[in-house]
Length: 135
Image (cartoon, rainbow, N blue to C red; front, side, top):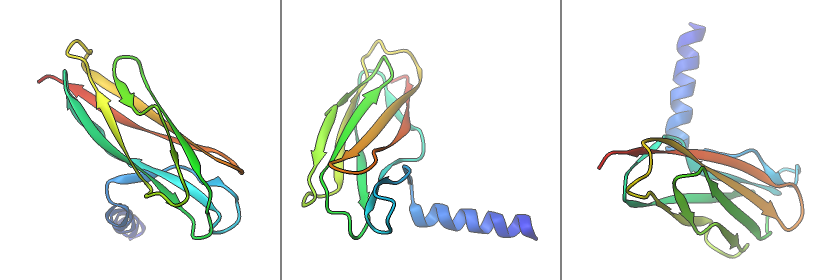
């Protein structure tokens, strides 16, 4: 019974949050004054020699009104643009990344890390995976 209830709760949470996961909380520990970074939860396939767009979102608490600098890094073999962006408090929270995979990139899983630093308060970070496959 417990196991069945846990499975139902897990499936409901996955449905509610969709295909994105969030980082730990950054900013302030006070309720509504922090932020999280939402990234894709599942490995995203990208073919050798291709460029793909991925959305990373800033989830602000209802009272969080600060600019946040997002910095992006990848493991060797693929590249990401932009490497950093300032998300102003008045901006849309979505950032479009361009992931580029050279034709000669080795097949396998590559990690993209994201760090968010507010003007004041604690930074937070998370990552997501890209899987390079054959064309």
